[in-house]
Image (cartoon, rainbow, N blue to C red; front, side, top):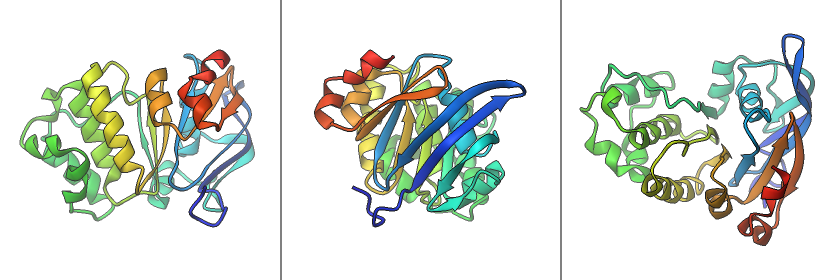
Length: 233
């Protein structure tokens, strides 16, 4: 149940998105309530990343609307969407590799005037031990933790994560699942995830995407735990 009196934190309303003349998102509608962990699943090429890039302001819609706390945000540029409180963590796990972990955090915090890193260390204590390390020398799991820590600076209301566990070792995925549960107590999460058992573990709701459209929404916790969404992939 939403903590904002029934008003949706994010509401995507019947949007179409194209790359040039090629339409890749067809009449997609979904919503995210405050405090949820919502997972978007689908095969490669289903349009998941395109949808996230559109919500984050990197792509423009052809029709429909995207509303954040009842405000229409689709006319905004990506940096303006971020300033509104939506952060987007890309799939490629790109950090400023020649800079230290501390310098990466400082750059992320500078744009929003946040120099207090303490709260993010509560989610990722290992990052605090790596502050002097060159970011390019981090493991894949450490880079993902750093990216999430950077996104959390300034206490955003919503974080979009594009396949955060891709290519990571099982024990790192387990650690991230624990961190997601802690983060979700203060920040709403919308996650693209291919790891179906992890989805079953962390999701409050699941959207299934295929060929540019939403084909199912799973709200039952029992059905999510049974991975009933797998049949839509």
